[in-house]
Image 1 (cartoon, one colour):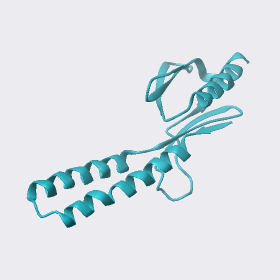
Image 2 (tube, one colour):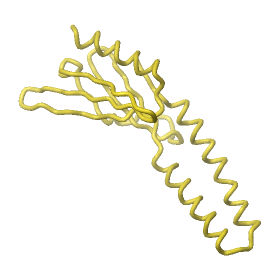
Image 3 (spheres, one colour):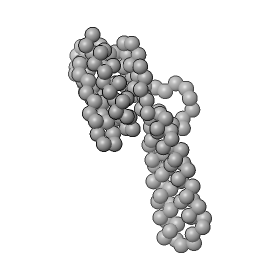
Image 4 (cartoon, one colour):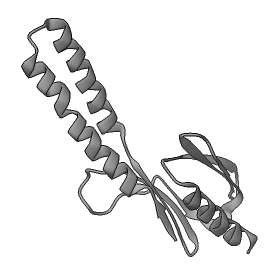
Length: 142
């Protein structure tokens, strides 16, 4: 089972790229220094968001739980997982729903230590969160 917000994030990225054209046109067409500085600030903000934006892919494939963070404009290919471990190590699974971002909290117990892993699930729908919860509850109960 693979759950991702890649389509929504990719659409948001293209909207931001399109929106970056308006301040550039404003700089070209305006001849006031304060408006130019304002438009440069808007462009800097859009570039900052474009650099930081990532899609999240949560994968539960058999005995392994994987979370990958991928930039939407990155070329296709192998992406190193942010988190990857066997499902048998998960002791507690909790998905907290928020207005903008949902949070996934996992408590893992290995032989020597306990760890808590928090993953932000930005722009995931409620249906995807419920699917993830039901799949994880089925895996943890075994």
